[in-house]
Amino acid sequence: MAPSTAPAQDLGPSSRDEKKRLDNERSTLRAKAQGLSKTDLVELYVTDMMSSRQREANIQQQLKDTQQKLDALSQEMDRKVAGLERKIAKQQQTIEELQQTIAKQKQTISKQQ
Image (tube, rainbow, N blue to C red):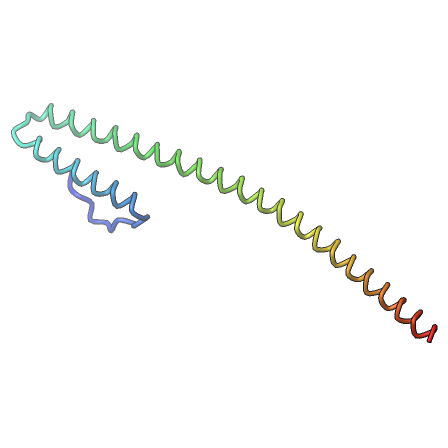
C-alpha cells in the first residue's frame, strides 16, 4: 500500500478533500498495520480495496448522471435556440413587409403632391 507517485489531477475543492480523506485513511491503516498479523493486514487491504472500488463506482455513477443532465440541458438549449431562430425569422419578415409598406406609402404621398 505504497502511496502513489503519480501527480493527482486537480478537479477542484471536492477532489482535494477526497484526496486528503484518502491520505488520512491510508495513514490510519498504516498505523493500525504495525503489530498486526498477516491475516489482519490482508483483511485491512481487502477492505480498503473494496471501499476504494465502491467509491470509484459511486464516482462513475455520478459522472454518468452528470453527463445525462448535461445531455438533457443541451437538448433543451437546442430547442430554445431553434425557437428563437424562428421568432427572429418572423420578425425579419415583418420588418421587410413594413419597409415595403412604407415605400408604397411614400410613393402614394409623392404622387398626391
